[in-house]
Image (cartoon, rainbow, N blue to C red):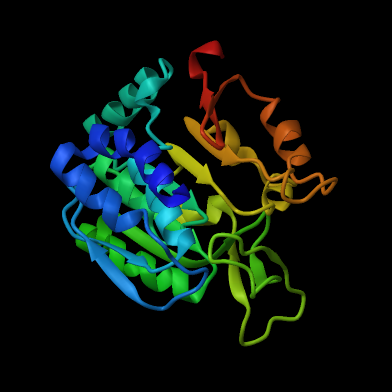
Length: 277
């Protein structure tokens, strides 16, 4: 009964997003009994996307599909502030520039797929520390060619090396820490400025951050990039790490700039008011 109720409660979202036929087809394909961990991958043909979406047979992968592509968590069109961001996007294109969108915490690539579809002339750089997740990102974004670029690693306030501190966690819950003595399991730590440089851009139009508490370090230092981005969207993790203070550096940093703040799903959307200067 519980399973039937969950499907029924989600049906309107699927139908509204994909239409009756495809919505119900995806509802019964996605919303079903799954395990916590699995290496089995299944493909789903999703209207509006150029290639099938690849998901492992896990609760986490299917939940992220629901969050990003059904609920459309990163749909900024619902916010009036999005008009200025879209104008900035078009202005950059008119100058012959390719706007950059940085996806920190790429997981299996659902956010990157969303942004690539919504901003077809932008370059999306997605950063992910876990090898198996990274393979899923490669599968899900290959159809976009060089428009979606992938970095295996994490974001930090300084360059260096990181390690995953909870390798037994679910694929959407990995946390990282700085590694003073890198080993064969270490992953690269990238700063936002370093990513911009690698992508050939002076700034990021959008920076999306879902990094399981690592924002406590990311906003600790070297934060000039914050004042250049038009939209910063972040998931706060104080619920996950009580009294860890992972959001404090973020609020201390961002309060120096004129942003509008809006809530949408699990994220805070911070739109930069460049006209306030």
